[in-house]
Length: 90
Image 1 (spheres, rainbow, N blue to C red):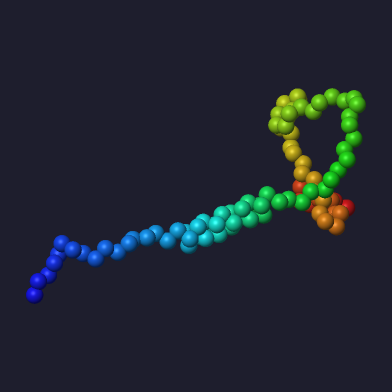
Image 2: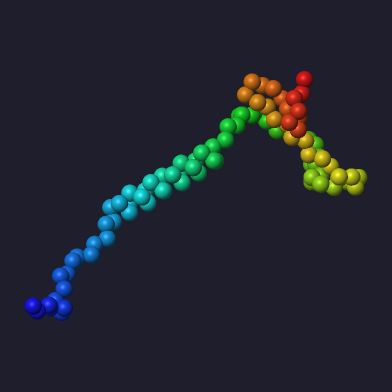
């Protein structure tokens, strides 16, 4: 029995690119939706008056008197409750 080692059956090796494109688009869609979800914030439109006179405030941190200035955070929820440093104001 003669075995021919020189002649091997050649199979066409092919990379399936369609499933790869599907996976890439799914990952891309996920990251786009995640980015849009993280950047979406609700805000209240305010019409602020323009100041005609006044002096600018000193920068935050050390005031002109040498004392440390504290920041106050004011927030309003959906029903109109006002909070000062996360404490409800009555």
